[in-house]
Length: 256
Ligand SMILES: C[S@@+](CC[C@H](N)C(=O)[O-])C[C@H]1O[C@@H](n2cnc3c(N)ncnc32)[C@H](O)[C@@H]1O
Image (tube, rainbow, N blue to C red; front, side, top):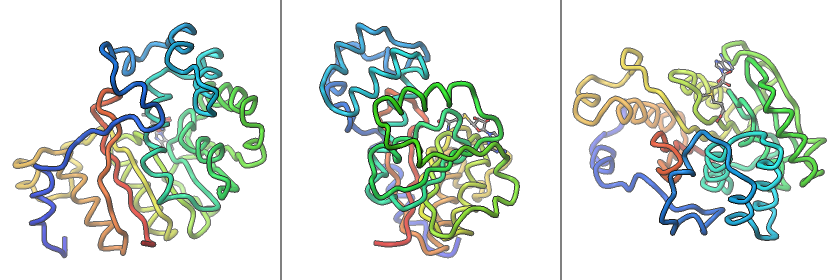
């Protein structure tokens, strides 16, 4: 680490670690909200109740629930991650790494006109991906020509990755998130990650930081310095904690 840790450490204690729902403000005032984080699929009548508007986002939620493509936690996680990062990160090409169903990348294809190509990368393409693409294409047919699927490991060279591409990744397990950061730095692209598990032994930060602030914070401080030292502006943002406790976003961009 080449810059002072002082202000960063202070921020860890004071920074709020959740946010309100941006795409779906109706969910901010719910009395019973456990169903938002459940891995279960929600019923059509719940969808009708909370996602009944004539907006594109509500139409999308209804379509996904009707087809049972992915569950409500995955839907909200992707929407709220996207809501936090979309302004800083849109570019012609968006690459969703360790994408699974690929919904984060697909949201860029749906909502951002400037985004011409979305590349969905995972070592395995789950069946939910095509199911999701099919029902999104019904609601937003303009996404079809933008989508490219690639089944490969992010540890391979990825020499197709073009300079200036935006990289996004939600819950790339452990050090896969670090590989995403490395790829973004190499291609001089903006990046947002929503890390999940933080393996104790792999934490590159000094042990004192982990002991004082927790392994997850230590890991993300180290990632923040890595990006900052590579010339990025880095922000810590959050999605609503009710969706998942692994809700910290590291958003890093090269242009102000
Ligand atoms: C926890 S899931 C997250 C999936 C998705 N981003 C989401 O938000 O639901 C992690 C994903 O990483 C993928 N993965 C694991 N190792 C990988 C690798 N070396 N290269 C590419 N993808 C990998 C898995 O197949 C899995 O889909």
